[in-house]
Picture 1 (cartoon, one colour):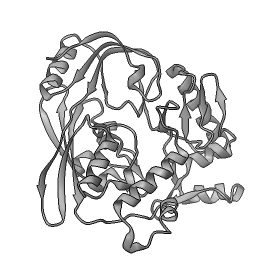
Picture 2 (spheres, one colour):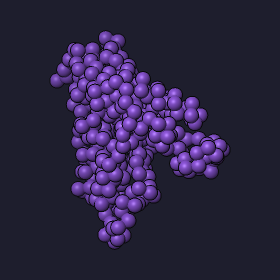
Picture 3 (cartoon, helix red, strand yellow):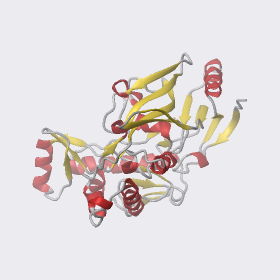
Picture 4 (cartoon, helix red, strand yellow):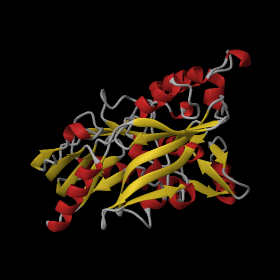
Length: 340
């Protein structure tokens, strides 16, 4: 039975460990729970915050509405053929647990996405990606409940309009649906993507005939652990800024002053700059201010070791973006969403 709790502290439910309180809070264990909670919010005219693993949000203040903590679980094969298996996963499942499940059952395709924090339901919203692979590469469909009507709707890849760390749920359909499950189309035989230089280097010593998806996953985990602090040890939301995409002309202009600038081709007209390099070159790697800091090993990560409030985190992010804009003329865009 759905329970709605008043004045609920969210500090343990966001990986930045920001101390913020929701006016109302509910754990969502079933589709019926979700439907009831949405009706409650409509009846009482409450703003909604849909919370999964809390790894991609910044709570800038207390939340004046109803927080729905999605705990919809379950993993089941819903179809397969000679080449693929379709795995349906509840939105409340932990992402890394899902990757490990696929490795255990020899469903391949998620190994490059190992150790990304958060839950499955948030993955399509962000089109999570790492080490040469994005969620869209293994996505089949998702189910979501329309907030206004309570009707369950299916979205295929085209309907999701995936982009770089982007989807329709961050733009035209923002705050209109709650994702309840995601179905992945995974390979029965390994298909390796080793285009990312650091990953290729980490696996170079392994003969091709001995390489396995387990080895790829292990290498990805080691790389991430060497660069990114565990939120359980140092509160953070992982990469705080997107890697900015600029024109080739802009890159050529910048490289006249900074010939060592890191960039990756997007297409013949655009390149992606390394946001971490820009922040480090701006002299902010390891910088701290009050309770918050730029991580000393990875300038792309903002941390909250002093358990400061969300306003401190946003102020530091704004200072970083301003300095990068002043120095390079390049605008940084945040990855996490800020509430309220």
